[in-house]
Image 1 (tube, rainbow, N blue to C red):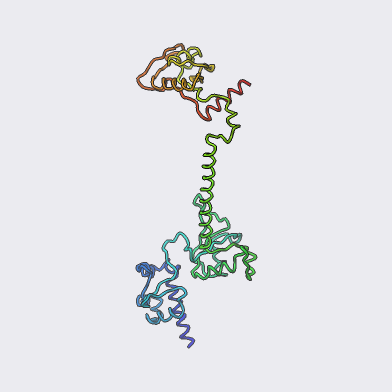
Image 2: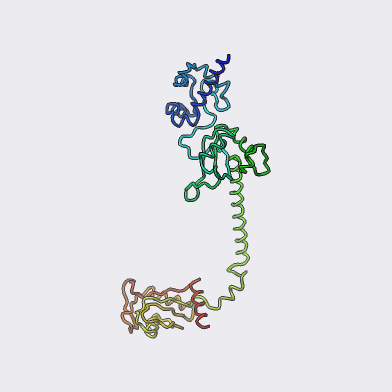
Length: 344
């Protein structure tokens, strides 16, 4: 009787081993049988022809009987009870753990700071670990930062790990090592729920903040809520033009005369330093500023010498041509700030 029970247990163990992750990684014959069926089903007839079952002289009916008696926590039969498959899905070349079978662990410290020691710890306390993963950082590297994901062979071990090892969220445990480890442990399904809640909350807050700003700008258009900023603008906008392309040795008078060939009077020109081809000019009105920029945008004039006050027109715009640009925004503010400092 005892020998018969021992044989039955051995047949069940062989059956579970053939369907295990470890076996499927190296046993190409068994792997081919599993992946060739859409549901991973393998017939008892086919299993009986595998070497370990042949060494036990196990018949298809014996394998089926012992599967029914010992292995249905990990394996399942088809409706006709002629085939058997894993309950846990098998994924070849798996890169990430299966959510239903996994836990998230946080707070691990030395010596539990690598795959070998962590899996050994959970193997001894909870049950066999089938997959271990450290999430990559933004640089796609995987430094250990005290947390990881662990997948078990048995789905019941997920709840067992949370119950025995989690020391947060008001959890208690009779396991002495739980206090020593002081870990946060939760199922990956629960972690996903937290993550989804966070993403939804973040999206809601972004929409609320955007709506607040939209309401603000609708109520206070063009910065009317900040009168002090308007007070700081002690200048009329659109009067300053940057000029480039002048002859480096050109004097201020020659430069001014040449620019006024546009038909626009220049209100003020900075002292043009010799050796530089650029300067700033100020016009009387924003309209004059636009007019002079448009003129030299259409007429491609080159100042041939330092005393040239007419300019030579080219058919196309070249690097040597006069180039005028109206100052706007921050660039214009900086110009007037510098002017104020010079006056002081």
